[in-house]
Length: 280
Image (cartoon, rainbow, N blue to C red):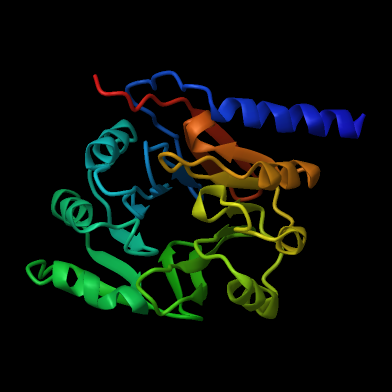
């Protein structure tokens, strides 16, 4: 029976990869109460962007999508009633392009930009005329409280312009892992720090084959895995099969639309909102 269920679930996610989402509603209020927090993984035509919203009204944006995603990002932020962003975190320069980053800083009253040391020079050049914006440089082991009870720690950061950084986030007893690198070195660093398990994992490189090992998944032991979409790419079938064999709920932005994970003090809930990115 378990094998049959796993097979049906696996076939469902694979078939949905090629489906078209339907349009969203005009506005979404996640109705965050005291001590509640929400991560929303945006369904863009290309690239990664994640919105963190706190019950106190503060917003954080992680990445801005692939180049040329400004209009889609603008639409998504409006749907979630975002008019101010306190912090932007750029995990690598491919997901925070010059024009889109500058636009977000200008239009959403951004107070701080966070990057890893390998991308410091790139972002400094963009902040020359942004006197009210502070730049924070993260490196391996950096720990910072981003919002009340939300603590971020850099588990692994590569000091190159081509790669990003892996970030562990804790909120009360919830552990979230945003994996943005892949390879033996980054996995060894996570094993060394023994930060397991993680309830929620954002997987790297749009589910590229070999982007995460079975050993790492077994040790992380997530309940939910999130995959972003990249234009012209689909997640590895072997990776999807491995996730389902390990009874991990898989959410893929191309299939499910926007994926919101609402964290309460003692548990969490996943909310999906279908999205259409077709031009009107």
